[in-house]
Image 1 (cartoon, one colour):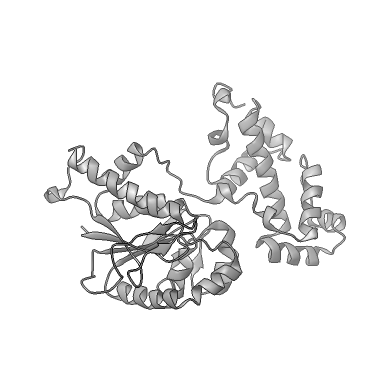
Image 2 (cartoon, rainbow, N blue to C red):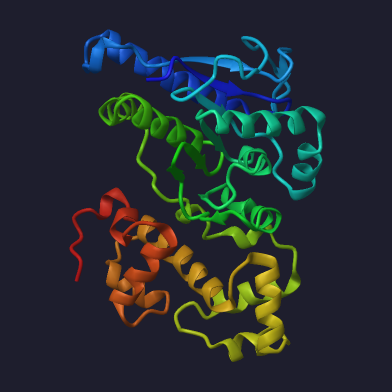
Length: 338
């Protein structure tokens, strides 16, 4: 059982993840002190501390001053200790590139690598996964990151097997999590790993934190970030023909490109294929219908171009990480599936 969970923060750290980690650690301690769960040896969960590279306060992404408990060093760290890197406010590839070149971040990557060699459990969420990857700790491993930066991450760290559909990935002392509020999932996973799965579950219940194993449900509308006119044209064509399946040839004609050129443009802009993009747009429309109408799942499937409802359910689960019924509006709960 770790003595401390250390959060290593930098200028630009996202405010939310730091706070949610403190909330989870505090809730875990209160649950144990209240006798709501028994831990081996009557030990309390690890205490949380926040450090910076030089021990100076940092300026958060919201431009607030965050005091810290001291500077980060390796002295006394070893197996059983936990080091966490909360997400940073660097939402674009240029900001990531400049942040990774900062002296404090370069120094941190060196220390993180050495901490991992000592057996310290290392974890990072959101864009801080780039800092962890830059340390080399993720080489040869599976990892996740915030979904809209997945393509940038994959290009920068080809030795890491990226799984942007996953919310948290952890094995052999290294954990990564997706976008900023996946930090809650990350902290619960660390609590389960280092203390007790039952404690993590109880804390999640008290804090009303849902279990979210996948980021896929948030990835459906990733195309809104693209400025490529071909992507926009293709989106309009697909949505205007949402009730039928489209071929690659049809999509190429609609965008005045060849099938090969269209495939290349969509891959470069979105990291996927035109047919998969069409599926995601159909799933996005299906989500809207499930959440806002009383139509059955089979009716929704037909309205978004799936004559085979079973095939629709498979695609929906793959793209969102859940069954269509999970997205039904509460008022639809009494509508039976056909």
